[in-house]
Image (tube, rainbow, N blue to C red; front, side, top):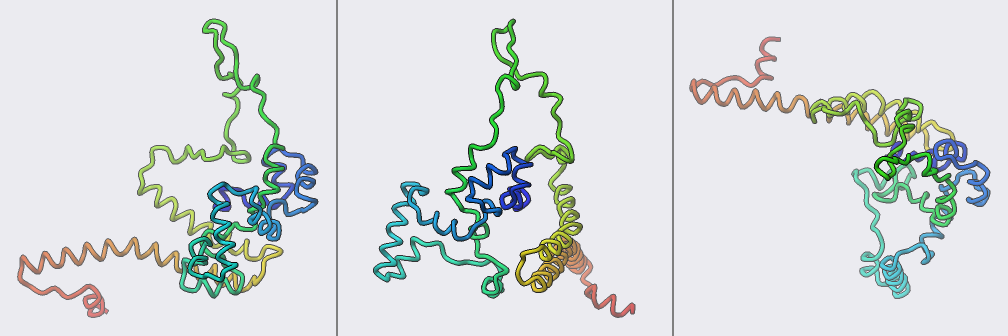
Length: 257
């Protein structure tokens, strides 16, 4: 998800300027001279309580939450405040150490709505004359032939464009995903853990290695389990038809050894 939404670009003036065509100095000015751009925990907390950035429904819930806090009504407060939940059993421990965040709160520091409203319209708007040509014969506008020269490249790929996956079956896509995870997940995780500014680097590295081992085990289980299940079903059918008892596979292997 972080790669999809270009998370690093949202906290880097240089990357954001390159990816979205907004002058670097304009970005910094719009974000109050903050080099972290949209990533600011204090501003995010302040904007979360600012009613002008909330919808009408959110304003009502915000009011109910404030009343529940004022009255000390914990049961009502649970209705109007997102609970702190983790996926893993060790999630609360990692959250206490600062290396994990609760569900739906991973990008909370980027909810700096006051900055988003300033930057949202800074990007250059395409000129429609460059996108359409006038067709005199049909008396209408058609897509410009110049657009055919714009192609997706490795340096500047199109967003959400995966031509290499066209026509592939779900099984092949699954195998490709497994290979991609096994090949890139651990190196990227270790690189992210050692990045400057990260807290608890050693612990992060240990967690990534442990998670990678568990991922490999999960993929192996998905591969081996159908084979073991097929062998068990075949053995059961053979025993029923031949009325002979077949030793389980582990026993056969032990006897061979």
